[in-house]
Image 1: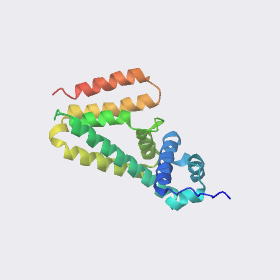
Image 2: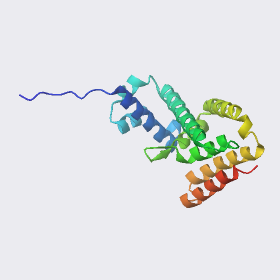
Image 3: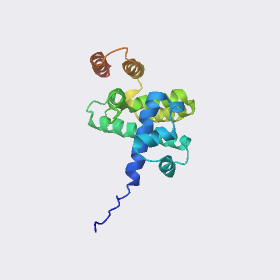
Image 4: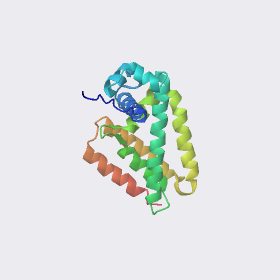
Length: 185
């Protein structure tokens, strides 16, 4: 008689996949276009499986948003530590991270971040708090108005790239141009 082996449960893996699918769906449809059923189907579990990890959609979206901010913060910190030039260090990390942050090469976490803030403005406060704290930490190196303009230009460039107004090649060239301008005083 064959022994039936039950697959070991991996709650952290499932939780991560739920958050990833929520991020993908939010980036495509905004918060209102996301359902627990869609997430469950994409992950390959039941709605009850999603509710096992998150008591409701609001909690799931909050956790997703906080995870994106945490991932972004870790990416920015990593890029800052690798940067040898003090002036504009945070700005370069901010610009660069806005174009590399993807989930499974499919979607930019920035898309989900933006769609969350656009469709549910209460999340703007969390984003603004993160940005304000980062700018305060890097006031010595990144408070120049020219660097603020470059960060805002990067936000606009990112938006133009995801809406298809400019192609990947143009985007890459313009991103490089923005990064190069962060070295000018």
